[in-house]
Amino acid sequence: MSTTLINRSRRRLVLQLAHPQFERKRFGWQRRVIRTRDHNPRTGAVGIRETNKSLIGSLSLPAGSRLEGLPDIIAAVPDVKRAVARGDLELVRVADKAPMPIAAPKVAEPVKNGRKAKEG
Image (cartoon, rainbow, N blue to C red; front, side, top):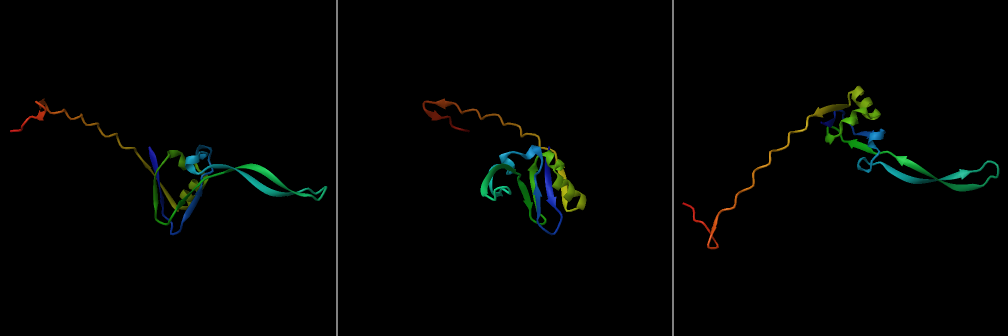
């Protein structure tokens, strides 16, 4: 099954994908080194401190738009739950279509003396 999100509000919705299931590059999750200025109160020295941070991905839905083909676990994301409860977002679960039957391969026409057989 897949899920469709429909923005029912008259404004853009930005949803943070703060859920362990979405910690993948496909959903915009990144691991970055963040540099900040660090002040040591004992010595008064100011230095640069580097820390590794996980940056979560997000979804941006313009007013009245729909986003299809999302996994079902999207319903467990806290921002999605809050938007559905407010009525700004509609969550529609769609059953996947059955796969199309594979057509039988065409049989080659018989070849006679290097030429195709005449029809009729």
